Amino acid sequence: MKNTTKAIHTRYQRRDAYDALQMPVYHTLAYEFDDADVMADAFCGRTNAPDYSRVLNPTVTHFEERIANLTGAKEVSAFTSGMAAISAMLMSAASAGKNIISSKHLFGNTYLLLTKTMLRYGVEARLTDLTDPAAVEALVDENTCCIFLESVTNPQTEVADVKALAAIAHKHGFPLIADTTMIPFTQFDGKALGLDFQVVSTTKYVSGGATSLGGVIIDYGNFPDISLFIKKDCVFNFGGYMTPHAAYMQTLGLETMQVRYERQADSALKLAKMLEQTPGVVAVGYPGLESHPQHELFTEQYGDKAGAMLTFDLESEDACKRFINGLKLIHRATNLFDNRTLAIHPASTIFGPLTQEQRDAMDIKDTTIRLSVGLEDPEDLYSDITQALLA
Ligand code: PLP
Image 1 (cartoon, rainbow, N blue to C red):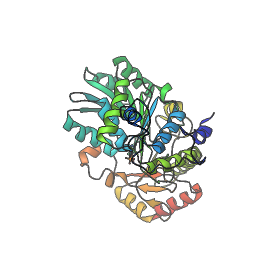
Image 2 (image 1 turned 90 degrees about the horizontal axis):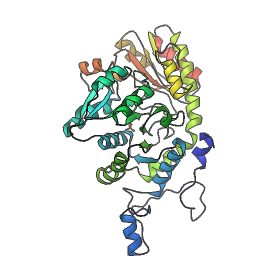
Image 3 (image 1 turned 45 degrees about the vertical axis):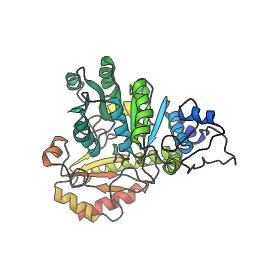
Image 4 (image 1 turned 180 degrees about the vertical axis):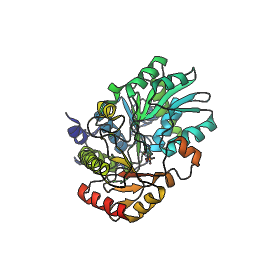
């Protein structure tokens, strides 16, 4: 089956008592057992019967299984948010005294997780240019526990060579982990690229119109000790397991994700091309443009649809603020891959709490606008952009 079919036709583990076509939402915390031995087997993990919904819930399990079916993963673990999945992933790969090699260009909270939160637990972040494999290799030592990349960095739209990074990680015996939120996992083969784990904020493309928060770890099973830590220590002891309601919303979102993605990516490319020709626009960042420095690498790794996020630069910060204030159709809001188009000035909002030095180190420019392109007609979006530019 192709992915568009699989996204809809993954069966539940058991047939529903009423033959419901949609996966029922099991809004229950506890489960009853027929006898003491069946109960003991469930609690000790000898069967996969759920015992308590902080660690296992049939609606969440079904969501995880659909993603496993779509990606060929050995195991998928669902969490309450993208950050919960990322922190569980990195806490599972690292321990005190270890270091993680990653990029200077990271999503804001991931940057703070690595450089501030995990530092407190004795884990060092070594941030470098992941587009330079020699620079990465130079940072590896006996305490390196993983390389962590983002498929397309936000908002710099930088793309690293995943196969080159996988070769370094595997030569030294540690995993390559990618946050692939920016390109849906149905668009590429993470395993063939050499990824050992993907982490995804399912709040974005999967949820379908920004309905719910969620995150998943997609685990190809190459590092069983880390897999065990995710399932046992993280889910049981840290908490953060996805709620059944979110799993229900996100399973619905998964069914329409590819159709929405194709439409949004096509509109984003159209807008990116028009913006390149628009007076007042100094530069456009979108991996689908031939002018993008990693356009060919992007296409080779992630296919011919380049996502629904694009950035463009105006002459000054003031011009950016006037543009944002002038929008009439496009919403002034954060988030990515909502059904509606959203615009934000990252330097003063998402990265606003950081110092100027930190923003400079991360190449966050005062002149950049980030657009998450929705399902509207691209002509209507372009009209709003041009009238706001005139403002
Ligand atoms: N990773 C990336 C690339 C993101 O853009 C975001 C949120 O914008 C996250 C992770 C965090 O996801 P969540 O908001 O679901 O915790």
